[in-house]
Image 1 (cartoon, rainbow, N blue to C red):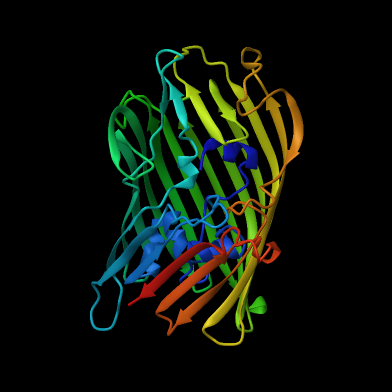
Image 2 (tube, rainbow, N blue to C red):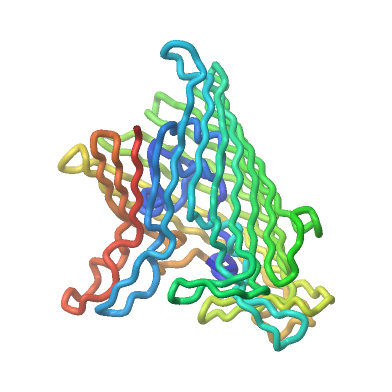
Length: 429
């Protein structure tokens, strides 16, 4: 993911997450595209306290499979992940609480921060154009625990780093002293039970996004990012479900670019006969500022020119709303579930381009106002609709699949495209 995709989409997606137990990225992508209004294992990346809800749990997947695949060819998924959560009970007898929980995951790309790494950067002269390398460490680490009353807390660190080399198309690595990219993030969160019918979550975090030939320490130049989110689940017996108010905000700063985001919303989730339904409504405000960033809107590539000391900021402001929903239901057999969902954002965008940047394709190509929405149908996790299915084997092994959205509209005699866009699996032991 690059920052251009964030610009075009208008920053329409919430940063807090959670759903029905034992979900995966594939389940989320299939039924609504975000996890704000459901409780699931994916929420551990937004609130590390939630690792305590999934003890002794393995998770893995092939990552998004959205690359262009020429007719008659194949390609392995490029972003596989795997990890696990392990819990140690400290209580007496059969009482699980208090307990200590640790966890880790390899391979996940933090889309919220990775979009602020450009494709290229320009060094001291205009002829010095360097690739920003792909990060390779990409590790999430977790430490959490519960009190004797079940209230939970957690810590999370994310490290995605590359320093001194780049990966070739053949998968080998070559030395390049200018190859440097780094994302470091730390979060802390709580999951508190105020009553049997109220569950409250609060999370706060700090992060750094850095790249380029000049390596800097974590506290060196003040380009810090801050993130916060909260939500509460209010159980309502009248609807056999929950009402969930939620709010989130972040201020992300990287070389030459910064973004301020606020989002508030409310949602519901309801248990159905052999199924589950949720819906959410969000108000979104987002402000982006950038200088010396340019974008190729055909290829999606972005470049940051670091040789200029003057900072002539372009400003883009988006304000509007988003509606999203998801539904799943067991059909035919108890171990087979089908899912469908979607999201739609409508934002009013105002662009103010600095006079010194006229002619460049930055976050704004000119002054003006217009409406934006999330991608209509590009096959990614950010577009309008998704569908898929899941397999549940004895409440232990669960496999979730997102089906390619254009599958039913292809010519079956050409052998074109791909059938699936994501596969994830979990195992509880």
